[in-house]
Structure formats: C-alpha cells, structure tokens
Length: 338
Image: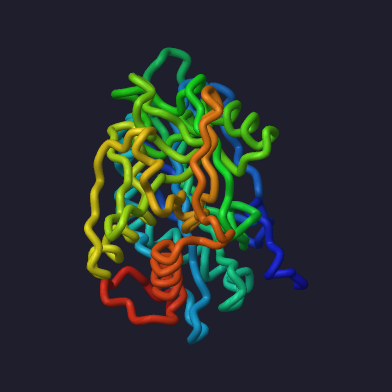
C-alpha cells in the first residue's frame, strides 16, 4: 500500500471494509461487515424521496504513542440520535454506535495515517430510511452504516488563512427547520451558494440568518467564531448545527482564562473582532484572513501578516495535541481503540 499521507485531499478514499446494521420490526439486527462500496436500496425508500437521512463526521487519529484514538464519539452518537428524531428515524444506541465505529476502524487500521503528518482517518456514520413508502410518512426500516477513509485538511490551505464571502441571496436553513440537526437537506440547500463562492475565488461562504439577514449563521459546512480581546464569541441560533469541535474549543478557551460568549452575532460587529475563523470536524480550525460581503462589497480583513492569529493558533494546537495524544487529555475526550 503506497499512500502519500502528506498530500491527501479531503475526499472519498476506498478502504477495505464498511459495517452495516438494519432496523426492522422495531429493533436493530446484528452488525454486518461488507467489502462492497454499494448498498442495495428499494427505489421507493424514504431516504430517496422524503429526505429521511442523517449522517455524522468524526475522526480517528494515530497518536504520538502509536495508539489510535477516537475523539468524543459520545457526542457524535448523541447528535445522530437528535438528527434521527428530527426526521423521525430509528435512534442509534450508544452501544451500536461504538461497536460499529470501533469495528470499522480496526478492520481498516492500515489506513489510519501516521502521527504528525496532518492527516487522519475520517469516519462517516450514515442513517437512512431504507423501507419503501409512497405516501409521505416515516419508513418502517432503517439502515445504519459506517465507512472510513484517510483524509487531509478540508480546506486546501490547511491551517493557513482563507477568504470567505458573506451572502444574503441564499439560505442554508429556515427558522424552525432542520438547521440544528445534521441531515443531508441542509447541505443540498447550500450547494449552489458554495459552488458559486468557490468559482468567485472564496474557500467557502458565510450564510446570514434566514429570517432577517442581520446575523451570522454558519460558515458553509462549519461553525463561525471570533476573538475579541480575551473573549471567544460564536453565534447562537436554532438553525445552526452544534459543532463538537466548537464545543471543545469553548471549553479550552475557558480553561485558558478566556471569556466565552455563545450569542447572536451581527454582521456589523465582526469589524471589531481581532481574529475570526471557521471550525468543525473536517476543518478543525480554518483561520479567516478576509470576509467580503457579496451584496455590498464591504471587506473585513484579519491576519494582516498572513498568519493565523495567536489565540486561534493556541486553540488549534491545544485541540490537535489532545486528539493526537501529544498532550494530556484531562477531559476524557479520547477513546483508545484496543
């Protein structure tokens, strides 16, 4: 196996095995191992017609000690259950979730990148309505599966600062909709805006609040945060997906002596931020050097020296060191894959 670990993109990578489990007659069956990249699905499955689908994104890291670590898997298990409830699907238990994650990582252990190269094993749990329905109603059968693949940074720039665009003519999610859960429809709704933003030279786009356009919503597929003085600030809204990475950064910031604010963030106030960034499982932290408002042309600039700000850098290193076993894990966030 010859893999260029240092230059891995963030994309699909074929590995040897995936795992699957069906929910039928009100209960989960046995976990199955498959080497196929395909699933057989009924043409009338609710996932295909009514969007009964949810997924997670998480990572396994090869530690400095050679051991493989899962980062905060319990939070991913909670979130896929919330997502399942949000679109009326069967809920994946903690026991099934960790059994599936552990098994698929161990089966594909040779694809976990070496320590220190900025790569990781991305884990994609997927829950879909697999039973046939023609009327608009929940499925009677569900499929939970997990596949994995080695990945590099989500943004090609890695931890180097990126440029983002604020838009107002597309919404990622509506108030009282599904923005707070991790379902495919939210991402489908963002594709046109993200594609246009990339064609116009931006790494991603920042969506405004759908109801009034006055507030920051999400930074494309990631949460937004800002640093002002000694305060870590991140938007709060019922249409924002709660990021496990953001949750972890807030804890680290507090323990570094910073004040943490999770609240609505207006477009106008970001001019006063010292640092801004996007955070999530895939990106970890992507520092932002420039934000351009597409409709007004207004420009907000950061990282004047071309480098990530000191606090973003400190938070990034602290989180990565815990994930990779290069620092103590006082929070018990890691689970060693035995």
